[in-house]
Amino acid sequence: MLRLTRQADYGIVLMRHMASDAERLWNAPDLAAEAFLPPPMVSKILKLLAKEGLLQSHRGVKGGYSLARASEEISMAQIITALEGPIAVTECIENSPGECVQEPVCPVRGHWQILNRAVRKALDEITLAHLVQPSPRLLVTLGGHHDPQERPGTLPVGPPG
Picture 1: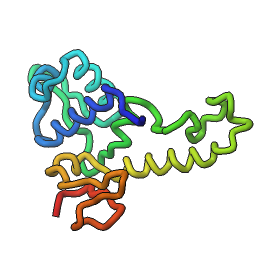
Picture 2: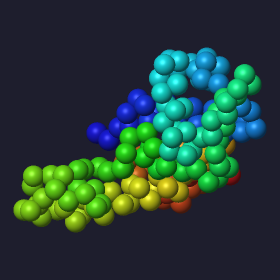
Picture 3: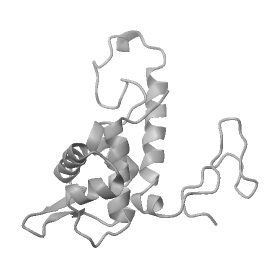
Picture 4: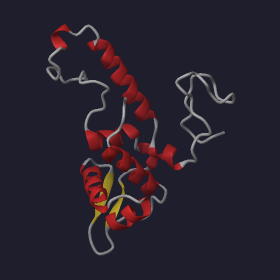
């Protein structure tokens, strides 16, 4: 099963919450309370996101954090990478030779890299701005069932419509 870590999951929730009121300066305690997340984890995530350039830190009594760029310019891939490192389905990630002991004899390594790039591309195409929009009505399921108003085999990422 492919699954994000709790840290990446919470990071996306926090970034979405911040994007919903992008002009506001957010402090960790208030953001934790509004997002119903543990304050220590929120503080840690905000610091990581600021270190990676996705958030700006503002010092002072009225300080806090704000998005470093417009929500349309921040992708899910950037958030996940900032919190978890390179996105990959397997250890066969781009530009990291020697990560896997099976690498010299692996007959599917190149195929895994194709899959890794496809996952990365999909996450690059979904921005924080998409997450601020209302949720899509229905996503395609693995069995091929879909909303008849959507093209077969597509996943809506924008607002319904």
